[in-house]
Length: 304
Image (cartoon, rainbow, N blue to C red; front, side):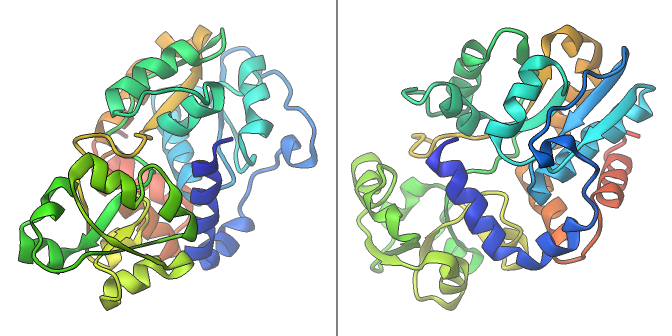
């Protein structure tokens, strides 16, 4: 499991503790939670798994309902935990389908990868997966590092890309976790890749609050953070792939990939960055359950 994934999980948990408590009571029965091993599914059954992470569970529920609507028999194995717990079950065929994230999954199998952009990572991931696993179409939605600003700041300086920060006429202060200062995509990466000079301020779990308050004017925020919508933030485009791309991608048992591809690829085609953030808002702010969130999203997108 990559450092980036662990940090994403920790930051998301801190930002959405209330939602995590709410969802804790709705986890499905899962033998993997007790350190056991899932049984092989019955013939014709698609077993959909999810991480123990509200956003991932919502996507998994969307997959499950879309398949059920298409006439498939589905079993849910949700809130399993981290990759070390569920990857063996995927490889064994006990779990058939799982929502994943391209960059973090690629690093799990190939920690020395040099792929960075969305297309490069997706292609490299297909080569890195163990025999018997494959991926279907990736979504444009992602859950990865980004540089983000307030909408007001973006409007004032006409910002759409990280590169545009080089034209800002006021001093830039970058907020993020302490370790960001030494990361290759931190201040030095901004300078080397985009020619952008920033001062750094360690903001930790208050990064978004500091951005909104104006203590910092650029922040390291994950692209699926619901506060992007609720706080009216703008994720800056990253044309030079400073950050490792980590798009939502279905990992599937190769034996059933062709059978379910049309259904799941239709979901991925509709799962945009804005859509994923909105789904997460429904969980963390509106306190809706994954089943209801998925049902509404599928209906709204003409997929049920």
